[in-house]
Structure formats: C-alpha cells, structure tokens
Amino acid sequence: MSIRAAPPYSAAVALCAWLVMLFVLLPVAFIALYAFNDTAYLALPPRGLTLHWFANFFANTRFRDALLSSLVIAFAVTPAALLVALPAAIALVRYRFPGRELVNVALMSPLVVPGVVVGISFLSLAAALGLGLGTSTLIVAMTCLAFPFALRALVANLHGLDPALEDAARNLGATRLRAFALVTLPQLKPGVLAGGIFVFVEAIDNFSTAVFLTNSRTTTLPVEAFSYIRDFDDPTVAAMAVLLMAFSAVLVLAIDRLVGLDRLLDLH
Amino acid sequence: MSADERRPWLLLLPALLTLLVFAVAFAMFVSVSLRTQVAGSAVFAGAATFGNYRAALASPAVQDAAWNTVRLAGEMTLLTALLGYPLAYVVARSPSPLFRRGVLFGLVLTLLSGGVTRAYAWLVLLGNRGLVNQALAAIGLPTVRLVHNETGVVIGVVHFLLPFFVLTLLAALRGIPVALEDAARNLGASRWRAFVHVFLPLSIPGLIAAASLSFAGALSAFLFPELLGGGRVRMAANLIYERIVTDYNLPRVAAMAALFLVLALAALAMLAILQRALARRFAPAAEAA
Image (tube, each protein chain N blue to C red):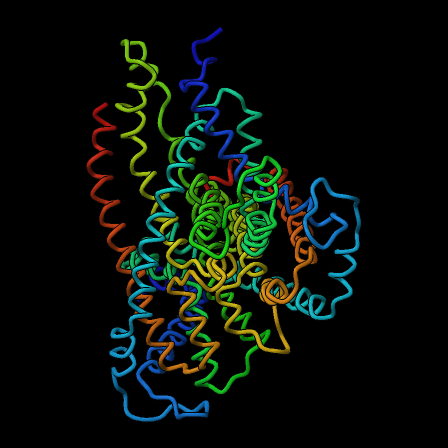
C-alpha cells in the first residue's frame, strides 16, 4: 500500500473527465450506428440494420473517383513529405550552423497559415502559370502544407537519440552513410511512422485547401462528401465516415504496436 | 564554406526548395491581390494598386467576419481549455494505466478520424430531427435549434480541437513531478490547495502552448462553420470561400485572404509573446520550488 494509490483529485473531478471523454467519443460512436441504420433519417431505436449505405457509397462513381484521387494524393504526398523532412530534421538536430533557429521557424511556418489562405495561394499560382487544377496541383500543395508534420515528429525523435552510437559506428570504420543507415535510421521508426501517419491523414482529410484546388473532374473525398451532404440527406456519408474511422482505428493499433501510444505524445 | 559547413545546408535543400514553392505561391497570391480582374474574364490587368485592400477594409462584411473570427475563436479556445484541462489532469495523475491507455486510444482515434467525419456526425446529432432533439421531444421538452447557428459551430469546433489540446497539454503535464504535490499534501495542504498553489502554476506554460494551438485551429476554422453554420455563421474563411464561389474575382478575394493572414499571424504573435512572458514568470518558480 502506497499513498500514491489514491489519486490526488476528487471523484467530482474524475466525473468531469469522464463526461468530457464521453463528449469526445459521442459523435464517433453515433456515426457508426447511423451508417448501419436502415432508414434514410435517424430512427431511434434503429428499426433494422443494413449495409445499403456502404453499397450506395461504392456504387456512386463520383465517390469512387474521389476515393481514388484521395488515395493517389496521400500515397504520393506521404513519402514525398518524409523524404523532404528527414534530411532537414538531421540538419536541424545534429548540426549547429548560423541561421539554424530562423530556418527552423521558416520550415514550420506552413502550419500556422490558415488552410483557406494556402488554397487561395496555390489557386493564384495555378492561375498565373496557366496550370490546371487537379491531382498534380493538389499533390504539390499538400506536400508543402504537410511536410512540417513529418519534420516535427522526426526532430522530436532525433532529439531523444544518442549521437554517440553513430560516432561509435564511424570509429569502427563505417562510412557516414552506413553508420546512419544501420544505426540511426532503425531508431527513427517511431518518428517516421508517427510523422507519416499525420501527413497521410492530413492529405486524405484536408478540406480547406483542397476545396479551392479541385474541379469538376478531380475531387477529393472530403470535398465530394461536402457537396453530397448539401444535396442529399441520407447516411451515405456516414458509411464513408465509418470506412475512414475503421482505417484510423487500424492506424492507431499499428502505432500502439510499433511505437506505443505513450511515445506518440512526445512526437505530436 | 568548408565541406562540413556546407553539409547541413545540403541536407536542408529539399525542405528549403519545398518552402520555396510555398513562398512562390504566396508571392503570386500577393501580386494577384494588387491587380484588377477584367470583367467577365480570367485575365488580371492594370497597374498594381491597393484598391482591393481599401475596398476590403471598408466592407462591412469583411469587418464583421474579422470580428466574428476573433470572438468565436476566443470562445472556442476558452471552452476547449475548460473541458480539456480536467481531462488532461486526470489522465496525467490517474493511478489506472488502463484508464490512461483508454483515453489516449479514444483521443488519437478521434483525432485521426478527420474533420469531415466529425462535422457530419455533429450535423446529424444536432439537427432539428437529430438525436438531441429526438431525446428532448421524447421526454416532452421543446426542441432547440442547435445547427445553422453559432451554438452548433462552437460545439463542432470545440470537439475538433479537444484531442489536439489534451494531447499537447498532457505532454507538458507529464513533466510535472508528482513529488511536489505529495510534499505539499504531507505539509498539510488540502487537495485543492496543493492543486492551486503547486500543480496549476507549473502547468501554465503547457496550458498556454495548448491554448495557442487551439486558437490557431479555431481562427482558421472553415469546414465546421460552413456545414454547421448553414450560411448564417461567417468566419473569415467562410467569407473568402463564399466570395470565390459567387463572383470569382480572384484579386479581390486574394486581398481579403492576405488581410486574414495578417490578422491570424498578429493574433498568434501576441499569444507567442504572452507564452514567453508567462513561461518566464512560472518556470523559474518551478526550479525554486
């Protein structure tokens, strides 16, 4: 028996925390129920269960095309952002050079620019250069927008590593590249994974920038969902939401397995 | 420059080039904002002028949107902090690892499940025939309007910000040693006194950092006011989107967006100054304690 066994807060405070957690989980739980609900409006209790809205989602060619472009964009942006961020993170953590602090602030600056402003900027760029909108413009914009997520996670990860290990490898005769690849890179798995997931989710989920850069031929999943919600009142978007949440749940489990959820706090 | 001095810059090159693309897009956007659109075409013409900025600053719609943005972002941040702080505190000090893991899992899952998913869930939950109003009707109470007004937007955005706020604050709270509160308690302080005089002051820098992050998110809110506000709640981003959709006058809209960016950066710079001042005020006290 230690005194630590009793928490330093009262039952009322614990209740507050539980209520807040309930508020956080309410929409997630609700949308999952709604997606399987067999009426087009919300009936409580649900009269029956159906997969109709999932079938509806996949039967809709606009949703299918949007899903495909969102996946293409996310699978292009994630490796691009990581490849851009990894050497930069090494430079920022392992080297001391004049202007380092300024470079750090500049590289993180895309995070504080409102998404709508980024959208207008790339729309202006496309208009000025006579470029069309669509997948490639979206990939470039999303990479610029999202690489700081990867950079932040990798910098946090590198800060926690001991550079002496890489030095030891070099003293034992390894080249700089070999020492990095065999000693440091394996230890960067948490940062690469966490950063990659944040970038991937941002690329799939971004609405405020993407809405300015899509056109009638190329849309992304959130933009298509937004226009569907305005035109129709049925749970098809709930089915999409469940698919995205199931995917997120797999990501969370993967993070927990490979990195540990606790460590994510330091990398976020 | 020697090879050793060059190496960090070589490593930074891809990131700096990416930032350059971003900067070029920005330069284009600012230069477009100084031009005039030829009516009925996609051509920008005329000499550079601040006319678009003057028009935007004089427009009541722009002034209203700017004020709404700052006011709503303030309300949202305050509410997020009030709800998020107790949760982060309990998670940081809970004796149950299972509870901690459960909350972390729920927060990260919610965070990763995205904005559109959650905005849509709130639209259905809070709608006139939604869960909340069905429950009210079932127990014989009058229904309330929770969407297409500020209430719905604030609920949605606060829910969106909570996981970011709690995870950021939690990372800071974990660094506060439990021994300090134990010492206060052993010296006879009540739970409340130990919290107010020991834990709370030590948590201020983390609290401000988490609140700044939430404020930045609230300022740039777009999807939630668009969906849950039903055209009745106009924050800066919504006004910009509405204008680009209704009259596609890119130079005018670009000027509005530039003003919005200045507003957002000024607000965040003020918060950063506050954060630095408070960190200085409270951090040395922590070492002295």
